[in-house]
Amino acid sequence: QVQLQQSGPGLVKPSQTLSLTCGISGDSVSNNRANWNWIRQSPSRGLEWLGRTSYRSRWRNDYAVSVKSRISVTPDTSKNQFFLQLKSVTADDTAVYYCAREIVGIAGFDIWGQGTMVTVSS
Amino acid sequence: DIVMTQSPDSLAVSLGERATINCKSSQSVLYNSNNENFLAWYQQKPGQPPKLLIHLTSVREFGVPDRFSGSGSGTDFTLTISNLQADDVAVYYCQQYYNTQTWTFGQGTKVEIK
Image (tube, rainbow over all chains, first blue to last red; front, side, top):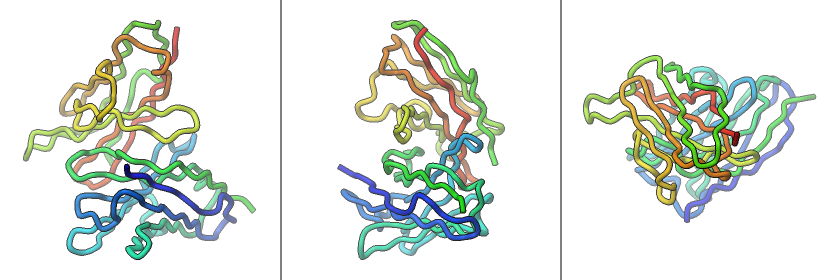
C-alpha cells in the first residue's frame, strides 16, 4: 500500500523559504511511471497545483507559472522522498500543502499526503 | 491556463436522490491522439486531502461505489451521484490535465443533505 508522509514546519516568516518533505512508502521516487507533486489549498486560491518531479531516464521538473520563479521540487533517492522549497514567501502563501502521486496515463492524483498547514507570519 | 468552472457552487439533495455536478473547461481537454479526456473528479471531506474518485472522465477508482459516475467530452463534464448517501456529504472538485503540463482544479461544489 502506497503512503505519503509529510513533514516540515507549520510557521514560516515572511521573505523566508518554506521547506517541506514528502516521504514515500510502497513506491519509489524513481518510478518512471509516476510523477511526484506538490499542491496547496487555501480559501482564496482553492486547490492549486504547484509543481512536480519525475524520473524518465533523467530527472525533470514542471512548475506552475504562478510560482515558477520561487519554487524547487527535488528528489532524494537515498531516502525515497522528495522536497518542496518555496522562496520569498508572503502571507498569500499561507495554505494547506499536500504532496501527491500521479501515475502516467491515469490523469489524476491517486495518493495524497496528510497535508501540512503552513502559516506565513512574523 | 485552462480555467475549470463548476456549477452549482452548492446543492442540497434528499437521501436516495440524485446529485448532478457540472464542470466546464475554458478549452477542450480532449487529446486527439488517443481520444481521451484528461478529466478527474475528487471528493474532499473536512480535514482530509482530496480523494480521487474518477479519472479519464468516467473510470472509477478501485473501491468507489458505482453510484458515482462521470461523463462528458471536450469542454463539458458531469459527475452524477445516484442514490445519495449520508457519507457522500463533501466538496467535489473536477480537475484537468492538458498539454500545458499544468493541472487546474474547479472551485468545488458542496453537496449536502436536504
